[in-house]
Image 1 (tube, one colour):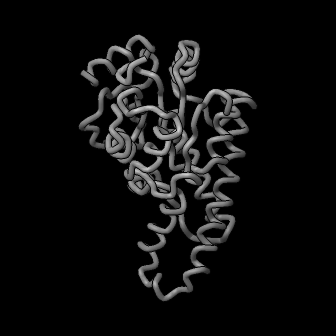
Image 2 (tube, rainbow, N blue to C red):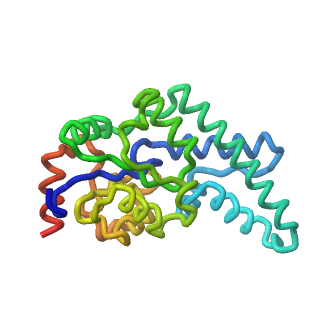
Length: 242
């Protein structure tokens, strides 16, 4: 194959593979309640907080808003507190996913199967934690879900969060492919900025939490992947790489 041929699909996770954000929000609020905190994030608040990539980063950002004297606190104590909140939140999220609260978005699984059958590689490029990825894809694809992916980048491998392109650059390096041979799939403006900064043509499937974002520069903006067949992707990709 030449570099210009489509050889790999790289997927974001939260909001892209599945509408996970409402479950994440509920999990955050459960963690706050368990720790006796008076924080309650509403849907409108969370839409704004999603501009901050990463769960721990989101918590810290909000803490800075409600506790502007944060610099006077013990730095390690704050780090430990945020880590505990996030640990509880992750456990609640994983339990919710395992109980069937989240399913893959329309067209996702069919496209993955079609791509694999045609010899394309699949990869994941996300800012979420490995536990969250595993919970979602184990439930959706079975215990051997990892075998479907040639490369997985997450919060543990790419500490610099989107919109920085670090995780996408890592995936291109692992796949041993140029950006021109791949397509990225995202749902947010931060994700789009990260993917395009890595040179990737990007297909956007917004969700209710990101529908208001600016998607200028996207290859396509689709309601979901129902009609995103491999044939269609190849046509869009070819047009983008002319």
